[in-house]
Image 1 (tube, rainbow, N blue to C red):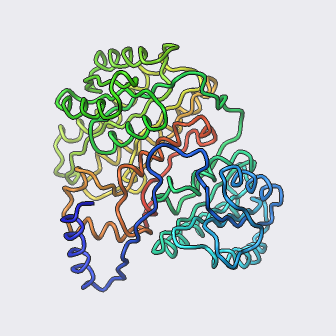
Image 2 (tube, rainbow, N blue to C red; image 1 turned 135 degrees about the vertical axis):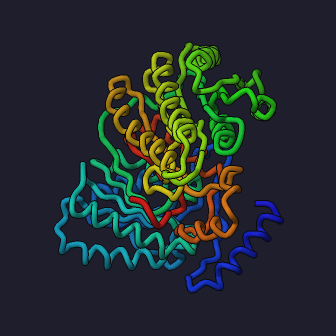
Length: 440
């Protein structure tokens, strides 16, 4: 954030403080932007406790592999990570003792810490629903210290391991207050026998550009796709990523044009030594905000066409060109989950993306292709800069972390979902919203 922007935001908070509302001052988040680290939890202290002994052992080993120091009791020096396990079939009255144990562990969590509850279950139970309500509430209490809270529902602790490590890392600093439900099943090999190719639509600016940079940092060859009017900006981005010598390419592409999409995807294939695409990130999108009663037919149809119909068509065109074991990451929005005033068209489109993600994941599973989505909340971009200042500052106060996210927060979540290790998340939508108070 620029000095001028920070000063304006501070002035807005002073004005809001005059309202009869509790106002929180945000804490700067610790983010691990750049190339993913081999040991993302180095120098972190983790306490792992719970009534699921097998899960304690497996998840402790996963944290140690990521270079965390792991303890089985709260430490006087405190902890950066508190992980508590609970069986999904535990009786209701056991939650009292569980909460007592959790409380003693939580008190030692340091500022910028992570709290993760892992529930062993294959579907909803009394415990999973209870824990979901718990983490949604706890995240609001701890967010003012930049402590994030999550629940992971998993059929086995082994299935949960990679997700737990990501949530415990500084690449998940702006994620909080959500329950992530995982699916079992044998996924693709995690080996990368050849340089992998990722296609990012709407990649010239904002979130799309951050995703392209993040994937390039992670070793992908990246096709930057955007409309022709963004050519100059997109080419500068490609040059910054290393240019064609590093396997980067820009192709003008209007996602509403099937011929342009086909041409772009064919050129993306040439970046791969095996002639197929590994990752598709459907990021292209627009807004045309107005209340439903006043919205024109063009405002309605333009948003649905770009944000939903074109996403479906890009995916349909990409699938025959994708490698088995590939990944598709769709960029939705919390508006698709919770709605927003004056955005019925956008909410319908982004809600449709979430449903499309869930259903397509089942259809392409035999090819070991994982389909997931991210749902950004209030992110500092040129689009959200158009929101009136006071409205924007109020929206920040409606998150556990009391601040907007950065495009890099979304990009780091997308990069994780683009990994083969994210196979258990197929069909899921991961919110990147700082723990917004509304929505599921």
